Amino acid sequence: MKFCVVTLFPEFVKSIVSFSIIKNALAKKILEFETINIRDFATDSYKTVDDRPYGGGAGMILKIDVLEKALTSVKKEPKAKTILLDPRGKRFTQKKAEEYSLLNQLIIVSGHYEGIDERINYFIDEKVSLGDFILTGGEIASLALIDSVGRLIPGVINQNSLTKESRPPFFLEYPQYTRPEVYKHHRVPPVLLSGDHAKIKKWRENASGKLGVK
Image 1 (cartoon, rainbow, N blue to C red):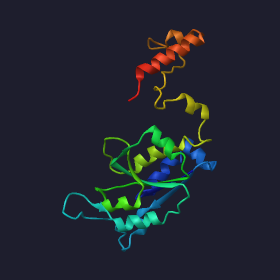
Image 2: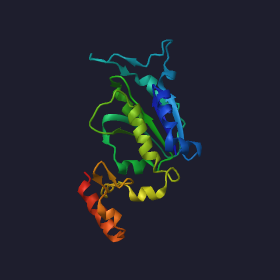
Image 3: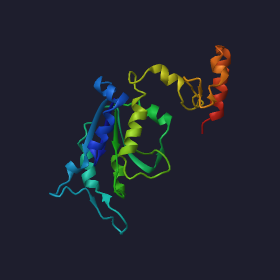
């Protein structure tokens, strides 16, 4: 699968994917990753990518002509989707991550400044929100989405992990402990030391149920 992030800060995005599991998946060519610098498509000598909003207001708005050229430059795969990270978008969920993991390519528009010219809607497939909060830019949200979707691609992580972890509509994963058995008077639950696998299984089911999911 290929991820493509359209951003004003490609180096920031690249620096994060050069670590850990995603880095290994890129090295093995299980995943592909590309950044498109929006500023490369500005038409003036100042590389202007934003302008004042019509009707007045605070902040600057990313220009639709520059952004559309950046999107057009992306070579799309047969099964590709273009999304815009926007707090007004559909809530991103594990189900949505699984849906995206079936694509050949995910193109992510990472906004910045006060916002993006609303005509971006004509050039994307959908808007996605990570939650009811505001970030200074879409780059961090892009990376969270890439990590969430990328780990579902076969070969990126141990597949046993995917069957045992927290995934709706199942309960959240049960609490886990390791050595030392006692730390500052806080003990590991005795049942986990019992060796009775049936009791351990029951305890884990109950502990997971207490966490629940929304």
